[in-house]
Length: 103
Image (cartoon, rainbow, N blue to C red):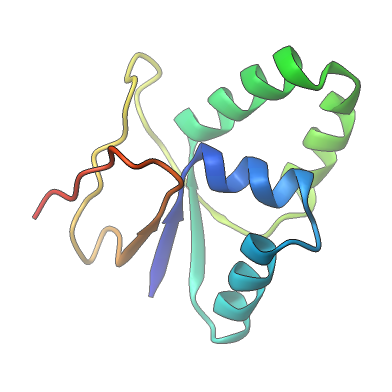
């Protein structure tokens, strides 16, 4: 199964490497699921970290190099990600309450 994580989840994993969200993703990887991260979320993650935690920018780049994920390309101008049905994405992990699934 492919699990698409959004910026909120990626930020949580980055800031809390021993937190609950990180543990859930580790279990998913152990069960041979594929974690997916889109280019828009990576760009947004860099903006958020630079604004809120500027001293952690180098750590973020190291995290992105070491974290195991499949990269999904998105258009740079999109302000949202459409959650695609299988087989493009099997599951979406988000911290957003206003997220909607597209069937």
